[in-house]
Every structure is written in structure tokens, then in C-alpha cells.
Image 1: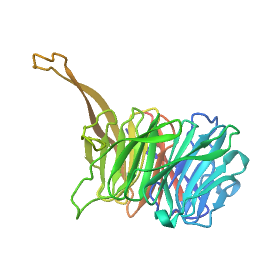
Image 2 (image 1 turned 90 degrees about the horizontal axis):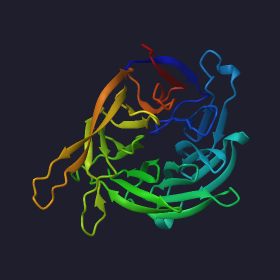
Image 3 (image 1 turned 120 degrees about the horizontal axis):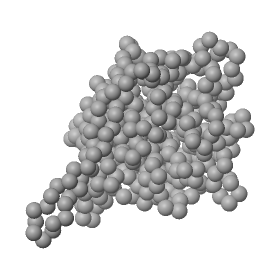
Length: 356
């Protein structure tokens, strides 16, 4: 696979050094692509897809000033509302994209008694539920009521360290934190239930935090770390630990980057995973899943053992010298286009797959 630079989208500001610092509306429920959003300290800049360097002055841009430090952004649909969700040091802010980004809901996550100082990590479930992480390891669940208004539903403390990112697939939620722990939970009628958690890799003196996570289209959990490693877990495979929660075994480990993995994106309709890092590299990975059948020789159990097996292949890489990438996302659901952002840059750079 060979991608080439398609265009640069101008932003009236600069991109902050925040992980996962770009959001693109690729919802299958929307007929048109609303555009891109990036974090610029206490503001969120929203631009349209037509806003290239050539005609930047002719296209309307929105600047959403939160007056607090923004930590993450996500486009999603809640009920019938097309939303831009923003987490910040104040808590949660939801904007209605169809009403010129009117602020329709806020939730203050700050609680000094529970050491909740800021929100980070956002995941949405099929237009119904919205999950938001917090600095003390708690996850809050929101959803629309009978009148279509967003309301608070549930709060669960699943982590012992600040949550850094979350992602969802069907009814599964994967969340990760600064201690290097990844938790798999499931949502049922607005309530979260923990299913399993991964072990913390490395010793006490050299633990690396989780920085970004993605769920692939087949449900695999991909987690990026501060050391540049990407690890994959299969939520269908768990190790029973007696009284403790089940453990998620690692299926694949990739020495993906030389420095911190700052953002990842999984194509919605293809087995592709995009990753960027502080090491100036962009990489696209191809995920292949197979099944291994092991014949059982035990006379009391003649049924074969079926084990899932994943392989990850590097299909594209590109290095932009002296660039600290902080965001990436596939623009198209089939992975034919993606975009990246870099620290202190006023541009969103788009790439497209060359047609052979």
C-alpha cells in the first residue's frame, strides 16, 4: 500500500501537545462529512473538509472556547443529535453540530473528595450511550432520556490511575490508564460491568503508561504505550484467575515506534490500524486473523481445541523529519484516506491511497 499527501487543511490556531489530538466525523449515520476538529489549548477548532491551504480564507471555521484545558474530542451521535463531545479540566461538554455548535450539555466531573480533577477518554455506543473517563480512574455513563435530552446514568471505578483513552465496539468498552492497565467492560441497560483486565507489563521501576487505544472492526483491542509498543488483546479469550477478575492475555506485541505512541485509528470497514508517534513516523498496519485447530489426544475429550491467531503486517510507513505527531484518524471507512496532526502546527495533513 502506498499513500501520498493529498492536501493540507488550515487551522486558525496551532495543535496542542495532547494525545489523540484530531477528530473526524466519519459516522455512517451522516450523509455528509462535517469536518475536522483539533485541540488548541483551551479551544477546539472545527473546520470543513473543503478548507485547504488554497481557499482557507473562504471557508467558515468554528472556535469553541471552553475556558479550561481541553483533553480530548470526539464526534458521535446521541439519540438524534449529531454531537461534538469535549472533555476538559472542567468535565464534559457536548455541542450540537447541527445548531452551529450550541452547547447543549455540561457535566462537572471535579470532586476533590474523590480526587476527580479532569475528564479524559471518550467512547460512544451506537447512538445510545456515552462513556467518559476521569483522572481518578472512574468511568461515567451518559445517555438520552425519553425526551432526547442527555442525562447522567452511571459511574463505576474500574481503574486505580487516571484514564488516558477509551474505545468501544458493539457492547464492549476498552479503557486504559497511566499505570499501563487495560480494562474490558460491557454495557447493559446503561450500566457498566467489568469483564477482564490486562496485567501491567514491566516492573515497578519501568512501567509504561497506556496512551491510546482502539477497537478494530472484528473487536480486537489495540493499545499503544509510552514506550512505543502496541499490544493487542482478544476480548473473547480470557484467563480465569479465581476470585479476581479474568485476565486478558496478550495476543500480539509490536515494537511499533521508537517513542511514545500518541494516537491510533482503526478503519471501520477494513482490517487496518493507523499509528503515529513522537518519533516522527506514520505507520499503517494490516491485521490478519486466522484460527488454529489443535487435535486433542485425551481419550476423555476428543473435541479439537480452536484457538484464534492474529498476525500484524506493516503495509505503509512515512517519516516527516523533526515532527512530533499527536493525532491521526482514518477519514474513510475503508482506510483509503487518513489525516494527521503535529504539535505546534496550524495544519491537518490528509493522505490518500494511490490507485494502481
